[in-house]
Length: 288
Image (cartoon, rainbow, N blue to C red; front, side, top):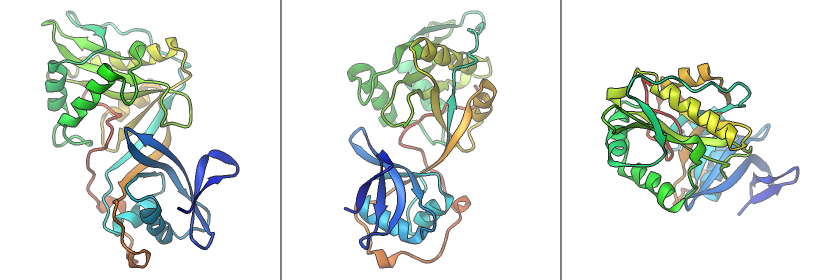
């Protein structure tokens, strides 16, 4: 496989053609048993069509994540699907908000998972959400974190449920950290959601503030998350002091690839593609 460690960055690899031409820099990591090629960045002068074809061959079966619109467009032009377009963000925990006063009868409770959350998040993540519907596989992944610490355990000081006057869970923030999929050391907000009937009460902001304070108390230097294009929660993150650090365009690569010479010459604009839900839900539901 023409993947070689990058001499100046041991945690990165170079994608190189059979004739020795370097095309891109990337990082490889495992996500719950699946291979991820992240930060796939074309090198200066690289032909993105050639890079797209090489990636399909040498990274077959991986989830490719790139900040480069041209590379993602070339993959889409070859018949692949742009699974998700998002922005990675960071909060440096320099200005951490004080605990918010919740509406009467509402309170924060220790992190966990129950049927009320599963039902509520299924309602919050409807067909019009930028990340699509909440799936049974999402519930299974959250349960695995709490029950088996797979693929990572929850960061309990930065995670919590919000409970209503009726004693039922009405939302949560779920964080982990430090996490293996980022180059920097940080806590990561995997999910933040509030059930539709409890939205517009400031509960999402309260949960977000709890996560920031909890990550700070746990000794982590920053908090990261990923928010999908079109998610209104981006405004809340901006207001809370998160800063954008990278675009992330996700294209799953098929295990079976076509010959390199068959890649089409037409370029497809990313705006013409349909976004599907991401393999991870690192942003929150709208109208928090």
